[in-house]
Image: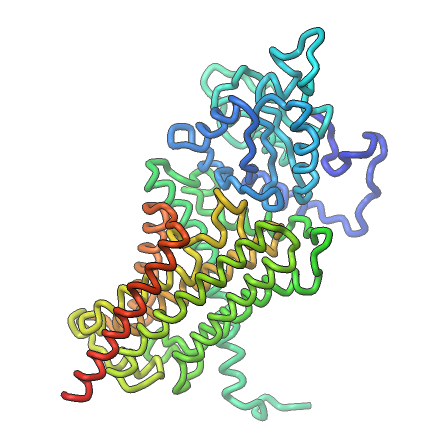
Amino acid sequence: MAKKNQFLSCEAEDQLVEAPFINLQLTEKYLNICRAMSLWPMTFGLACCAIEMMAVGMARFDMARFGAEVFRPSPRQSDLMIVAGTVSKKMAPLLVRLYEQMPAPKWVIALGNCAISGGPFCFKGQYGIVEGVDKLVPVDVYVPGCPPRPEGLLEGLFKLQAKLTGKRWWPLPKGVENND
Amino acid sequence: MISLAQIPIPLIKIVVGLLGILIFIGLNGLACVYLERKVAGHIQRRPGPFEVGPHGILQPIADAVKLVAKQMITPKGADPILYWSAPIISFAPAIVCFLPLPFGPSLQNISINIGLIMVLAFSSLNVLALCLGGWSSQNKWSLLGAARDIAQSVAYEIPLLLSMLPIVLLTGSLNLADITAYQGAWPWQWLVVKQPLAFIIFFVCIFAETNRAPFDLPEAESELTAGFHTEYAGMGFGLFFLAEYSYMVVGCALATILFLGGYQGPVAPGWWWFLIKVYGLLMVMIWVRWSFPRVRFDQLLNLTWKWFTPLILINILITALVVKLI
């Protein structure tokens, strides 16, 4: 998992914000639960991983069960950017602009090997691909795979919810241990 | 110090009524969001929101809290006063629209003899709000969405108004309580039997007036990002949504009062009949949204100018003749 503080995308990690004037920890806790349960993703697909992202929205995997099916086409209304696919150097400035257009608090999931590290395009002499979207925007959850299965993206969503609220909300599949 | 007895009774009535209406609008927004997403899910053979609370019942609350807590962004180059007044202008008249609606035999906030005109006048203010929002947010998608909305609303306002005229001719009143009282308890005594064409045109026009699919061109997501509310984040967007659901209920309530007998039912007339009919019509609206694709803009305008307006004019003429002769 990436940086601890969400709101400091441009600042260094040790430059923490001052303590709030009125500290409402309990309110903050419930607020975060509400935020975690209604993560609206942006309609934003870059390459083949976007097909898997669409599959997650469809009937078989159905992200709607966890309140995250409201794919908003406008960045102003979305909370979660799923970077689904290869980020080319042409696309990089637009990706940053879209991220900056989203209102805080906002989160990013890097979906697939290309978005994590450049994936198969990461070789000597390549010139067109950004090797890892975390060089552009802060990433909260990395979902590996080429492309990841839809269950992988669902698991990434659960990880993000766990990051927001501090606990995992949904039962683990059989034979899997929680290694958070 | 003013004693309680000095406050005029109508003022107390209106304040209590407004409070009740605000509570109703809030609850209705939550219920509609849940209903919409659940129905959408089941139509697409998936469960819809399921895990947040039992059967996803807490989902709209989580959404509402999240929207309230989002950052408020005023885009660069936008006119801040117009930009932020648009959602309020969109939402505030919806409250007034609920005032003259008779929910039950004694559940009407203000009984005025021009109730129908009042509802229509205030509900058309929504167009102004969408126009302001689209114009002031300095975004080409917003502007295009607003332009489409104005063309659509101007076109559909005419058959919407004309489709209510036969009812007024038949009942001889603009007071919504009188119109309800004119109809009987049983379905064959309702005005939809006498005016089926007017009912169909009225109901289709409500779809267009509230920007619901298949007439949701002002916010066509595949063409215009999010239409007139592209730049609205957080509660600005939330207010637009709340207003849309409120106008849907106002439209369905008008259809219920004018055509389906209002609060009257075969057994035990009361507000429950009214709510059953209103939410039945609302379910039809949601059902249509998830079943039909969006129309093209020329189809939309052809439908109203070439079909609805002439048909409803003929309908009025025939109704007037029959009322005069009998």
